[in-house]
Length: 451
Image (tube, rainbow, N blue to C red):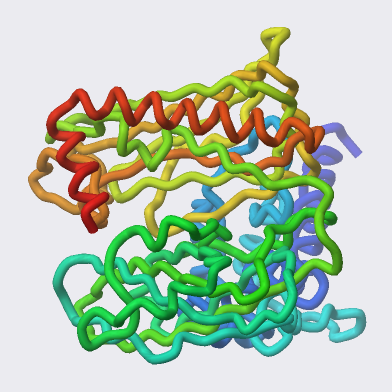
């Protein structure tokens, strides 16, 4: 056998082996584990996704669509780029997994043998984290009109707790998901918020802020998944508390009635360390003079904060509106080492999440946190809600803008809690005082405080 013929036969054999290997990619053996791990939590009845992905029939029916959106990395929705520290429960596919899906689709989407096939994931009562310790429901539905401006509405619900509790997770089930852009949760330890008189015909009272004594408990936004705090960490909820849910309703062109259920999960014992929130810039850039000229392709605001004591990072998240483009937080250690905590290079208002670190991230004393927020107000931004672009300033409506990155952590030593809280309050107060020297920002702050 001459060399040319041998090479030809070797080539044919390799092609046949490759084709045979491709034919062995089946739903039950290779594809189901990928789909069930990364897609089914949203693609199931009662969740945000428009169709279920819980069986071979579900997935094969939309196989070509799945191959396309995974190849383009539109799905699964996970906006954070790879950072210096891995995130827990990351919904990202490896190049090998994306290639497996494409191979499976290109070769007819075989189901494969049922032997050893994984069972579809089960979700207790539709709650992603299992059955909650306490489920509360809005006292009545809020009726969102078909159109008009965005609505901020606070609805308070007595929890009926007879003893202090420690909250380790919250899950949220809206009844009219399309109109709920996001919610914020608060604890009113005095249990008085539900006594406020209803404003108008709908339940609750208006405004972006609720009472002065309330404590933040987190929130939910489109695309977010519920998470348990790491072991041993939780937020206090006092006996007799009200849960205050602050809704941001976004009319969609169709009248909707929203009556949510909220699932609360409690820790078995009080935590030994207290969670601390560091938002940069504070107040979603309210004090930063946010004013984006029409046509500006890369408008940037930066902020920095130096830790007065060691902090262990727990989770991180970001917020902006339609014009947001890039959001980043880095940590510069005292020795000059720079670590990336969060980097989102393609922000999408429709997909917001909080990213929990796989392990607590040790940030030494004197670590400087740097944040930069980029907005794109040009006609080239496909998410720009205005055509042609218009000047955009800070505001509550979706067509206005905001922007920040928020790191949540715990003091490495609980005795340093006061120093961390004090220095952050001073940072926020200094920015607010400076903002009051600008007439436009001053008027905006006064308007908000008057609500």
